[in-house]
View (cartoon, rainbow, N blue to C red):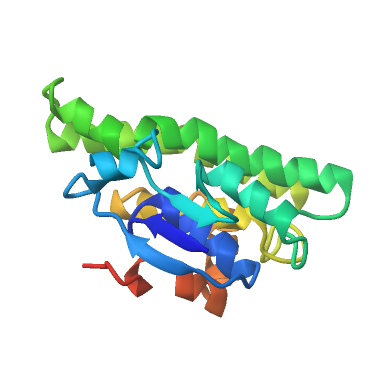
Length: 210
């Protein structure tokens, strides 16, 4: 398998987490978002969405990180990312998709760039936008985790939810978001970051990190 991604892309990061947690071997081929390589014709020919990550696996190019992660879990059922229990699987997906759908869309790099040009917002306004939308999901997420009585992980071991959560909190810290009201959320993050799988997936450990 070959992963086409960018070191600081949260979607690339979540896919790296999933690959590492599942213990799957993969190569990396960095795609510079700073240089706009994801929009180059040779890349969009393979991935018309023009974004990262893209995973080359089983003879085809696969786009959209959440679909890739679900495919990986079905294709390689060992070390599953979802619990065996139906209701626990639902809960893991519910919380993971709250982050992946409700947060990723307004906080995507191309949206942040569009706020500046052509809409003319300055960096302070963009940062305020980012922190506002983070709060709309991280606050209810903390409430949900409290109701579930979570410990170091959502359930017994890191899985889909943790693979989506950790990259989002990495970005939250980049934008100086105050996480003091999210103790259960950050406890899960800390437990994950102590594991070698998540350390290998961390942006700073990537070949294109700057």
